[in-house]
Image (cartoon, rainbow, N blue to C red; front, side, top):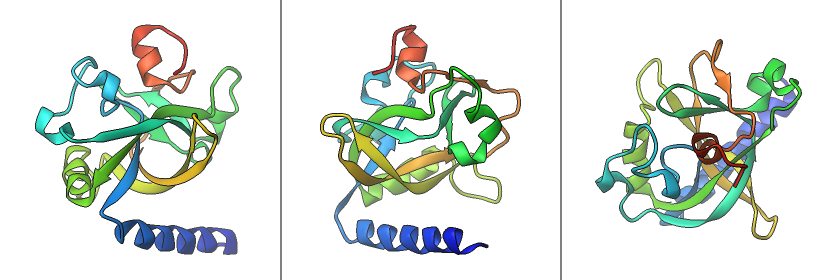
Length: 169
């Protein structure tokens, strides 16, 4: 592991500890957990899982979105540089910041299949940029963990727009 990767790991651990000391945390959602897609996407989370999630505004995260059929997957640009270099693909993912309690995060981890030896997603810390004021905020995101070979890249970076055929949020 190089020094930059080691420093990033330390910073992520420190940020995670800081977020754990608060009663709530920010979660960046880009797919079926987005408030405007609940009940409208191909698949929707159970209502009791999303009840009480509080949206704090629109934001972007650096990365790529891929269409996995019934839902999208987020991958960091660094994990798919060959896709990130293609003309016409946004390297920004559009979504919503939600304020969630730590018990809800644990339930969402189960829903996103974060456990086990081959998880579907992994919850990671990232930095989002709020669209309202340009402020950067630390937040959690669900990163897709499996192979994306053959997956369709959502060029706009906006799953809601992709589903409705409109432009990005």
